[in-house]
Length: 68
Image 1 (cartoon, rainbow, N blue to C red):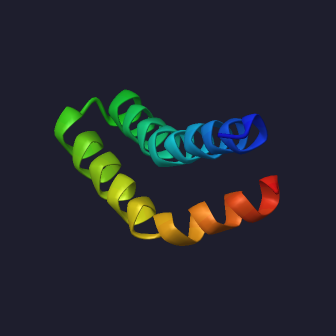
Image 2 (tube, rainbow, N blue to C red):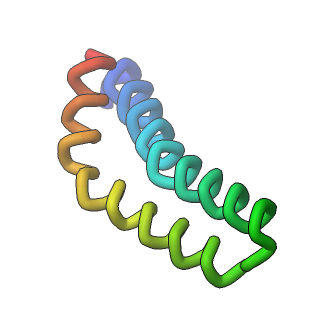
Image 3 (cartoon, rainbow, N blue to C red):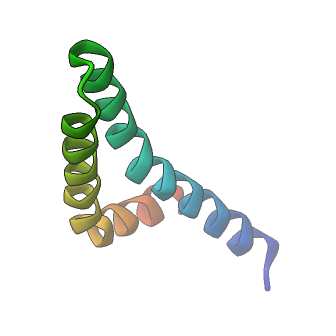
């Protein structure tokens, strides 16, 4: 496998993982620390994670286009 393709694959995969996790985690912590309610923070963060996951195909295609 070509090193350039491998590097781009690793970059896109890492960026995609961060796009999935970091916003939901940020919302979870923000809700938890402002309200003190773990359950609401978990539900909203979990919901946000799956909303972002629903757009994973579009996000992935965009990242591949940007990194090419």
